[in-house]
Length: 132
Image 1 (tube, rainbow, N blue to C red):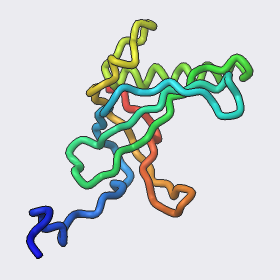
Image 2 (image 1 turned 90 degrees about the horizontal axis):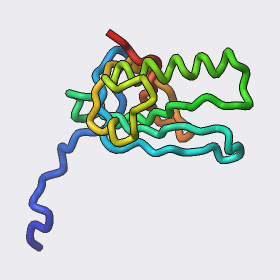
Image 3 (image 1 turned 120 degrees about the horizontal axis):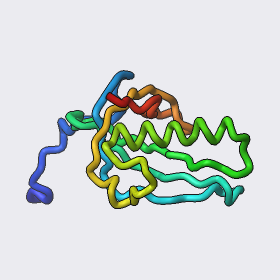
């Protein structure tokens, strides 16, 4: 039988999370605006982040939540603050003019943590956006 693929995948690297710490991330595609499964007032931007310079790192999925009219003002202020830090870190406008298309290929600094997902696999989480 001949060579079907033409690639030796015997030593293919395993993909996985990186160690906790500060990294540069890049938004790999246009984020999706989503709503909560059980609550239409829960709205968020689903983002996919590549860890720059880490070719064996899994992408990081990040949810940037919108303020929620059902939540207390203090909680919404924290949500707006997180949104502002994310936009500033990615070099995007904070004046309400940003679109989802503006996120594509934007780069920023984050502090990543590690967590175990529901299937027992270790994954990276955005702990904090870094604004320099």
